[in-house]
Length: 426
Image (cartoon, rainbow, N blue to C red; front, top):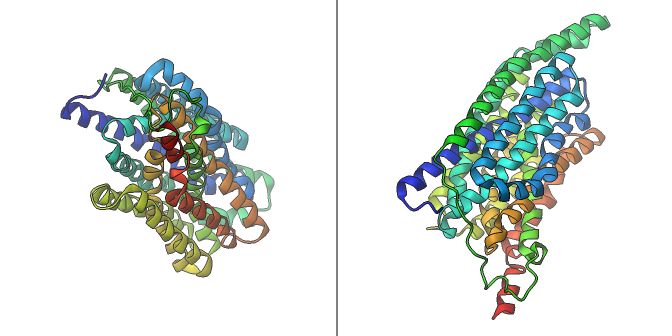
């Protein structure tokens, strides 16, 4: 059923906006968790970034099954199922905290990621096809505001609970010699995570029920664009070269976005900034991103196209990444946080540029893009290994080739295959 009234359209956007707020809140807890679990479970940089690996690799695992699932359940029930799955993941954190078990924490993160994969596979194409294609990036930008506003709040909320007086506790742990006393301190620190995750579990279960009972309409994708793929051609997704390149662009984009937001607390500590200050740096990154979304909403598509915006923002990202590498102290932190602004347009622009003309294959195409979110698992892990081998600042060099590929996609990659098949169909 198509949303055929302004009221239905607005209600649908509001409901989906709430979902984007929820998975933004959960996703951007990872920056705080990396530092917290590094301390609680006594990890090095490489080990600590398995937080992002466990969380984001689940998108790769679940993306295609999510697409098959949504074909049976539809968008609304799929969103509800995603929320239920996330609630199971947050519940796993309770025994993990009591046992101070890093593998169990990672299991919980993996299950949360599975739920988010279902949720995002449903919600992102839902927003894309809810209205005109030309304004798709604008709608996704509005969702991005909901997502990143939650991301701004979540490190503050969780950081206040988990990282309270953490510098003092770190000094105690550095000086204590008795193994039993050290274990008791770490166990006490680990218990801080229990109450927040009980609250998260309750909220997610309630939202899952509410979404299932909501008036959210079930949308149908348009028929496949005959100018993109004729009936005589094999309608396999891999023939849509621009979609494959879009999935790779999502891979590197999510990798650098997660790296910028989730590593900045540890980077601040490396630069000698107290954790009581550095724990807010992820929120600063998200504040820049929210500002970037508002700029995108104001400019697209009336003043600037999503293709041109992606090019300009990616060039800015290259300049800021160079600034991170070439400066020190607060200037380097400032450049890293400001990458949030440059990142803000990338997801909203890459999605519609990658899904154009897929028609009935939109859900499967969206699943392929969701698989690209695995970049958030791989690239921060590479960063962690390089940081251990060299230093955390030099390790940000991994960002440069990522931005160069996004620039290629913005300039040429989104046209590859789309124009070829248009010509072939004439």
